[in-house]
Amino acid sequence: MANESVQYPSVRWFVLIAGVLSAFFAMMAGMAAAPLMPVISKDLGVDMGVASFGIMGIMMVGMAISVLIWGFLVDKIGIFKVMISGLVILLIIHLLYPIIGHDYNTVVVMRVLTAFGAAPGLIVIEPIVARWFPIKERGLALGINCLNMVGAIVGLTCGPMFASMAGSWQGGLAWLSVIIAIGIVYMLFVWNLAKNAQTPVTAALEADTAPSENFFKMIVRNPAFWLGLAVMAFSNWANNAFNDLAPGFFAADPPLGVGYGPQMAGQLASGNMFGIMLGIFCGGIIIDKVFKGRSGLLVMIGFAANLILYNGVLADSINSNLSILVPWLLFAGFVNPFTAVGNQYFAVRSFSPKIIGKVAASWTCISNFVGSFGVMAGSYALHSTGNYHASFALVAIICILGFIAALVSRERRTEIEMANGKTQRA
Image (cartoon, rainbow, N blue to C red; front, side, top):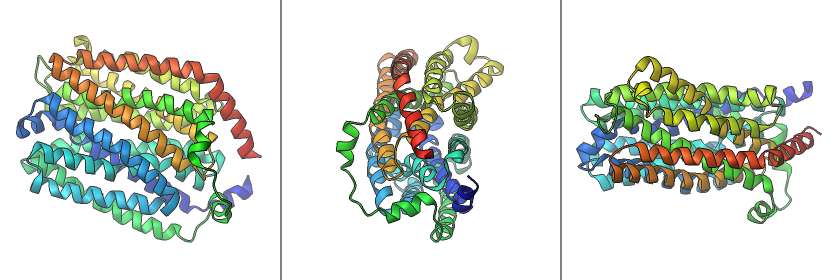
């Protein structure tokens, strides 16, 4: 183990931060529009359900397709080229909002392109951890990825704040490009540092000239792939739908919503995101230290808690009292990522670094399609019923199905994790 720490260069931590920043900008760009939904829908002349469907829901479809493209490119052209390319796209799109962002259909197209630029942030962390970190540090590295949630907090708070300062929501989103530009500079700096650094894993990948087994044939007979995919699909539906619905619910005037307005709604959602950040950090540690590598237990706890906490915000006794609502959202955020963190841990323990980029991309692609359908279904329910109750009921059903999937597959997941953990250590 002492030799292992020498073989893994210290630049790995800068590489990890680059991956976290990639996810940071994905979260920031995706969530900045959520608390602005009432303003955007009014400005573009569409109702809240239609605005949410096009600006958040269709974006998720774009994300689902995009992650598959970027995931295969990670294994072909490298992590840094993928991350920097995505950020350049985000920079251009945000600069264009004040110029062309005044028509609903145009804005929907821009959000699809935003999804394409943000997608690398959703799939780079697993390849980075698998290639740049020794086994004993992987739980910690996945936990540090919690800092990407600061991006969601920045988006939720700076989106409304910048919009107020700029006098329009388009100008507010354009100001986010300054933050993105700083990220590009950092990525280029770390890429230059990492060019001459190698780990035992990256060196082995370079030395391996054997032809790769057909990826799609391999996953068909690999139960680990399908177990992880099932959990991730349900997790994405529940979490994406809640993160899309909640800010609008808090911002909209009664009787549709609670009536806190865009800025307060953004702050409330930011509290939820801060809880998510803590949950991501603690999730990997809990698996390592408490559950001894058995991720299925954490996934089950996550689905059960989400079922209760997500739907609890509809209760007047909770949403009308900030002294209750704020800690409620903080705790809901804390358990929110248990399902996703459990699956990331499962992926790192179960798949070779040679294919983990493709696995992460395939999982994220398919589950984002499911998640985008969840956002659209919630938006349609909101449009059809004129209230949020049916939308949140759909989230509850998905949490129940996710818990059942995790329960049924728990023993098999643990068996795969333990077997692969021993193999990797050997």
